Image (tube, rainbow, N blue to C red; front, side, top):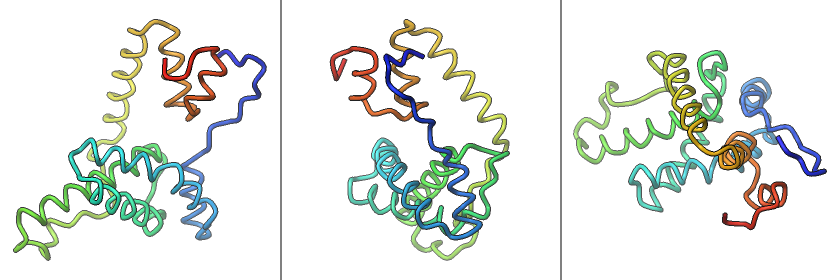
Length: 169
């Protein structure tokens, strides 16, 4: 990738942060994970149809679940982001089921635990293939912007500066 004289910092290892939370209740790692994922999870939940207040509540509940269930995270099964967004999705589904079937609220069949993807490696491989195909279909300049934004977690202002583009392009 083009750097234009800017020193690139490595992307944070979110899986290592979850491992640190599990191993030693690392509050600093949790704060960094929370700061990174809370707005992204809220945005995801809004796209799933949750209202702003519910999305905020579920985002906080998601990150609280990450704190409580960090020991069940297995980096061999899924990326940290996949695991976290699966927790958010499951919490959203639980909320919908509670709203539709309040009489079954205490039924263990309707309560989700740590997310267990039936075949996480297959889902990840399929997603990777779709994303790679979508990126390959883009002009190289657009693909680079996507890579920097989503895979390197760079803010748009930094990407614009690095690539010499107007912000918002």
